[in-house]
Image (cartoon, rainbow, N blue to C red; front, side, top):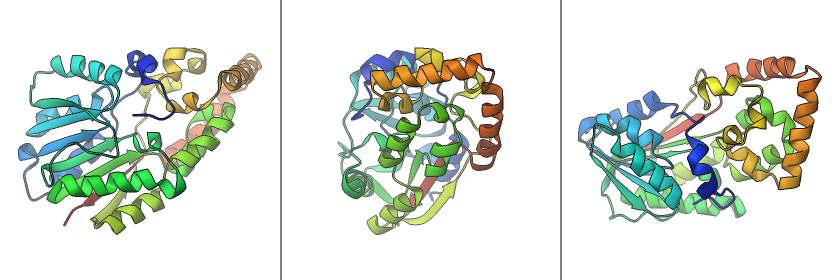
Length: 274
């Protein structure tokens, strides 16, 4: 599904650092429906390796886990088969199209996916995706988007200082929160909300590994690194290594943490189809 990251290569390493953060926000969003959450059928659009689907299987009637990358789906299949629940379906499909019938889904979640769509002019593909979400959602269903705000991208990841080109390119790929809210409203969604899980970290304890950027499996957990060419990556790691040898990393990390603890690393935007 991603237009710039090769998940055939990174799928195996993805789960070594990434955690499904914001689960309570997602549960609370779906629970706002008039239908009990245990009776809802949920679409996990761009499910990746199935972290979110597995975490929520016990909370809902069933989950359709959709992704366009076969390597990611294989990892999701392995993970979901290890779950004590079997109320899931794996589907191959790429966004913005959603291969399901009109008004057939009670809730949709999309976690850290929309920046992998073709950003194009005014994020036209994202707008098509929101229209598709409206089409397949039942009236009263909720749509929740887990993404990163622009300030979060610029200030809330300590290693971003070493990869400014990647951050700059990411800012072009990520729709701003204001744009997301506007597109959802224009599509007909109502009850729009923003929620930031300030205390939660994408990488969990791995985020505090100041040697992390030197490890490919660590870098594979954040698609920012995929926005660099091989030469740019080599230069960034050289800058990082020099800062490490000069003892500059702890102070840099502390500066970033002050911001991260204020603004968080992710934002969840939710809305309801009337």
